[in-house]
Image (cartoon, rainbow, N blue to C red; front, side, top):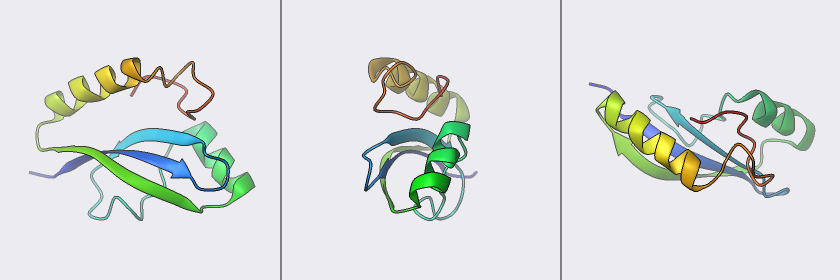
Length: 87
């Protein structure tokens, strides 16, 4: 079974954050896939840092954790986050 990584990417110049998930073998090299986030990277460059929030092998557990994290951090409404929808 693949490892599911939940992560927070932070743009080192602007401070904008992005919460997401990946099953890539190297989540640190993965840039993220959100539309607003990708546009931000295109404009400001890819100088980002990655924090692994939690790893999972069960997709349902990962989804439940991600939804709670998204709500707790208000990632859709907050201007600190690039997320456009709950993860």
